[in-house]
Image 1 (cartoon, one colour):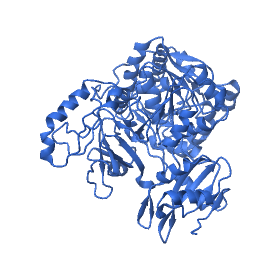
Image 2 (cartoon, rainbow, N blue to C red):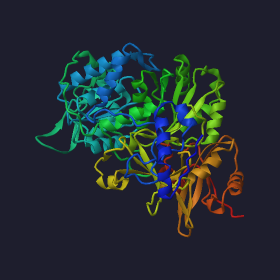
Image 3 (tube, rainbow, N blue to C red):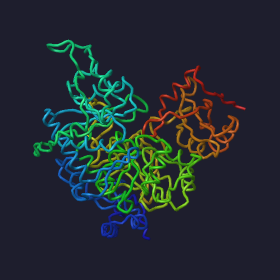
Image 4 (cartoon, helix red, strand yellow):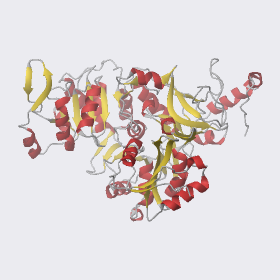
Length: 617
């Protein structure tokens, strides 16, 4: 292997330009992940254009040709559906009903035809509030084909949250799952943009539920021109109703909408922000991901990650189907349904988040299920500690590959990924095609060389248009075309990137920066600790105190934990804010720790937790 050092004097680098170009050509002559993992790994800061600065990192995979920016997500996916025809595309793990790629295409067009007769067209705004079902995708594609901007909303949302999301996006049409109709109905009182007769149910309605809804009248609590009260739910249509209307013809030359989809950021530190993604953002990221997350040999893939979340939507659903694989959908992580589904349908590829890894590691009846077909597990949304990855491999009898990637909602979502056949490390992997990245000093914003920690910044076709209704936050996030992730990271001499923490989550103790992830990784590695999270609690004397929240398998004392941390870490990283023993770490649907809720727990003295103060002795 030829190792190219990061030479700082510009004239020395220029002397090696021929060697660099030769290595680049060698890389571009092959497209296998194994070769990427094996050789030429450290040619990552090459200047593909004359104006690129030093230490701007590009991908070891060659750039790919992307479709015209006007290509809709629906048109891109329809091409794949036509290609794979009668092959099974989606299977519902509960009902065991399935849709072929041909069925998906036909159903999407039928729904689009029916909606077009209801004057749903370019410029319209809709929301989907549903769990993972086979109808989620045809509804989305139908709306997308008509030029509609679609908000993806968590079905776990409360009435107030749904009201917030619908008003932020000014949604006029809503597709909701059966169990949410009452919650959505209550929220609609405060949603002026909603159009009469534009609430659709994702599942067939029972007669009893129809009867219950018939007499409902909703009073608008805001001024409405020429009306004060009207029946907002005179008729609820279902997806099945739209398909039965047998109307698949509609205008095919509808212009592309500026904003295609609006998922919401996780809101771990504040209110969720709507992320404006274009058609080209999502299509580009599907193609970028295909180069790296090559699923063509796996065929059957689990569809557990929520489709309203960008990781579940782009990577788990669209990317998987675009390569002709079958997705088995799961609405929730219900142990028997999930594991029976993996066994029954011989699922070979699992997309997970760390909470799913914890479930697989700790579920006592796992050995009662035949999971011998699983050969690859891909982690995303949040970092999987190496100790957990090792424990996860142990629960499978066969040799299971584990890899992970990195992304965020604002990047559609993927920017980095481990080569799929490489050994697992805590690295988030290599830069994906058509993407540039750099590490900048947190204070000076100077671009840093390898092995120096700073903020990770990304540039590429997958970067969002901006935040909905929030130009100031957009300006802070995207500077000169570079998206500032807020993640503290570094890359090594082989071009592999490593996350160390979130800038906003760094704890400031007496001027020292304390990374919660460093403490958490030590805690989670303990065999008797199931889960852990660390936050900084305000202190007027020192700034913030590192404070731990722990979920333990059995009796674990605060003394044991403090001795563990104090023996491994510097004094400024000790848990001086104390230790809380709780039943569960609050997390978002994507598995990210909700640190604002932990702070509320720590501040609420009536909360049912076992708290132990730090003992200086």
